[in-house]
Amino acid sequence: MAPALCSCLPCVPSHGGGTTAGADVAATARTRGAVGKSAIKKSKGGKQQHVAFTPSTRGDDGGTAGHSSTHRSNESGDIQGSGVFHVTREGTDGEWVHGATDANGAFEGSDDGSVYMDAIDDFSTVAAYPPVIHDAVPPAPQDLDLDRPETLMKPLAEREADDLRESERAARALANKRGAKAMEHKAEKMLKSNKVMSMRRSTRALQKELTKPGVHVEERGFPGDLTEEEVENVQIFRRELEKRDPVYHEIVHGFHVVEEEAFALCRYLRARKFQPEQVFTLLDEGKDLWREAKKNDFYPNMEEAIGVNRSLFTSQYPFVYHGKARNGCPVAYLQCGGLQSEGVLCVTSMNKVPRYFWNSFMFDFIDQLQMCKEADKNFMRCECMQVYDLKGLSRAQVNQDAIDVIKMANQITTCFPETLHCLVIVNAPGFFSFAWKLIKKFIDPRTASKIEVYSSEKVQTKRLLELIDGEQLSSDYGGTGPSQHELLQRQARTTPESRGSLSELMQVKGSGETKFEFEVPAGEEINVTIHSRAKAGAHFSLSKESIMLKTTDVKPPGEGTGGGGKDNYVDPYRVEIAKNVRGPGTFHVTAKSLSKSPPGYYLFVGDLVEARQ
Image (cartoon, rainbow, N blue to C red; front, side):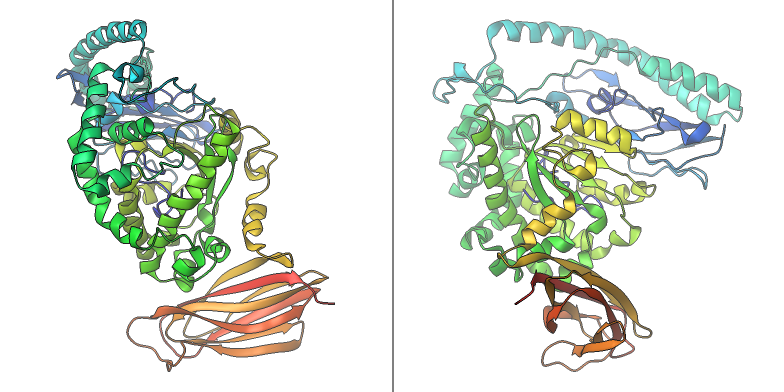
């Protein structure tokens, strides 16, 4: 399953958990509404406590409940969050920052610290069907039969226990209603105060109130665990699929090779609170895209679909599967810092990028699920666990090209809801809040509740090892499995002679030079190709030490060069500049623009092979 390219969160899908906690955060993801006021204490070492005060929100039962969340860094200064995000930079001792935000705004603190906090807009969907992150394979229900509704239901004794918990929940909601206004008043009073000691007392008092236990989270909406009403809606949905446009049936049963019908029906219904008509509305958003992709059999041959092989594409979009989680589902990794939208567009055009996502969903993801099912007969769910590494991510990567791909990718994910089990974001940088302001527009509430964010290597490693066995986890994140570099290089070794590849995205401006160097080991040689869609063109030279090996003009075929207008050529092109360059040695590449036009991007690609005898 390929992620949707959401800027620095390129894989967070949007519709009901389609492809996209710490001890203090586990309950937080389950109890939230719209953010009202916020206050932040900054203490020694930059460790912070963030308390968000939330106005009342109306639940499905017609009652009103106040929801709140407390986020605080642990002893290592780690930032932890789930669903609601915040990021801090190290602050000064004893400094206080206070301010207010609405549900759509960002909170900015002082120059040496910033916090972003946002809440989901639709609490009711998450409250009705709260996602539960598993660290073991859930037992498979036995003897499921859609023609025998009782096989889809939860046992009677468990249903009676649920009824009791529901009555207790209603009582708590009533108590919360009475206390909500008082809590909001306390928050407002604290934020208006200019006295540090008064704020300290208010914050501690509110923390004590907000962190009381009592939140019960139970997974719902899976076959063998349904209520009578949910079973009835499954049957309605199933009948309507047979009556209506066949494209709806095709989409819902798109994973039929690996997914039983009962699980497919429930997966789509969970995304829309088991309301069949709302599911059809969701399907309407993606059905035309489905029809168009189906004409091409969902692009089974990646190289034919996008014009380059998978390894070259993933050199700029480093998404790779490896291993399985403790709950049985496949694990995918994305190195967001290595994601280059300009590099992607050097090798393929924007209108071909969606083909990558179709191929990944309909072929790669299904293959991964099949392997997981073969490894454990209890594994029944079409879900994936994802790890996003934000190390090295820069603000420049959050650009218009990336946002355009977000829109295309998230349209495709409407056809694949509830395929994300959880997303663990690691190495979160200080400006993550900036990127989140853009990303949040594209994320469904259920998806948001499945996201965990960490900035401390120690804490994120501990969490990942709770979810993934050490031998299955990449060595970059505390496991003993292959590194991300090794996994990507494996994709590049397409023949017995292949030794991997290297790439470098070069920005060439109208004046000056752009340079970089690379090594070729003994016993290997390299074939060098430049990919671009820059209109201006550039002059490239390849040298070893003081010896010039090759000089070539890289420009669009059949076109002159020159500035003015858009700096990108319409269709990507490639030029081979050297072949069978033998190592060992250090090689230097220099590029100069052929005109004084706006900057252009050129992707250097070197394919390493075994040296000929």
